Image 1: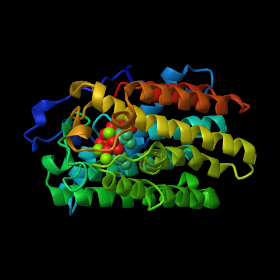
Image 2: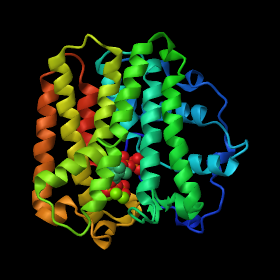
Image 3: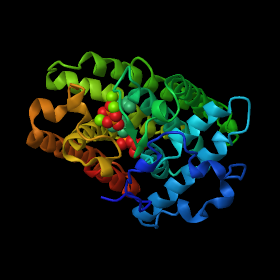
Image 4: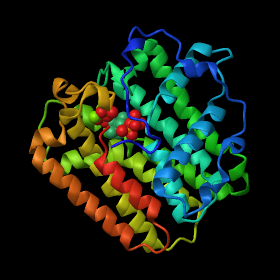
Length: 341
Ligand code: IPE
Ligand code: IPE
Ligand code: MG
Ligand code: MG
Ligand code: MG
């Protein structure tokens, strides 16, 4: 499957030596986002694939504007931050934010901060996930991982700084200035998703499970934290803009996100076994090489596929009970569980 922006992952081994300057670093970022974005985006009549394409372009512009250029006192760190953000990520989490926002009939301008912030948190999590102390991986999004392209200390600091920037973006967003309660709720939601009860806690469980054989409940609990939490926060953050949202509808959205998040990580584990390095942009077979507890390695490939289908069906069932325009959320949910990279 190709992603909406028409890109398929290409492994760019030509930068494997590490230090070549990525070409995008020469482009720059002072421009305002609004000037480059198609205003018709908010139209619900556009087809989801086209909308998704435009939304990926939108969040990339927002990220460029929010990350600035590399001139400054810590330009090497800044260059590393940009290296790990502008490298062909699918932007799944920002897309979920915009799609949920569309369902809530919110303006895109009010969603940009959350969309860019969650992507920065995700990028930081990938940089740290790849470190020698964690998964010790060499390839990410088809390029050398940050600690190889730069050095380990810079990779650690780039993760730290991306995390801080994410929260700063929401806290200082001019569009959200008129919605302080929503901004605060978004910050709390994202912080919860990153912390000990979310991504970081899940990563810790993942490392503790290396070389062991957890049961299904234990591995899925770990998935819910390490991967599901950020995916769920991407669906729940836009809800901060609608404090009067019907609690039942909110629960249905949360169920959708929970099931998609789990399916997303099982699919990731499957792709590690069945995918090709050139397509997934990560070294295929890395989970087995690192004795990771992975869903298909524990319970088999057919069972993994069946589990993904069951979770997807449940997720779609939740969406079907929601009123309003769920076109984009449905399309995205289906894409996420069927992804090839
Ligand atoms: C990879 O996430 C890490 C997981 C949580 C499974 P993505 O598959 O969203 O990675 P990118 O952002 O497209 O590289
Ligand atoms: C991703 O899990 C978890 C994160 C929070 C980054 P993986 O370790 O399976 O992700 P990949 O396969 O390296 O992208
Ligand atoms: Mg990992
Ligand atoms: Mg990993
Ligand atoms: Mg993986």
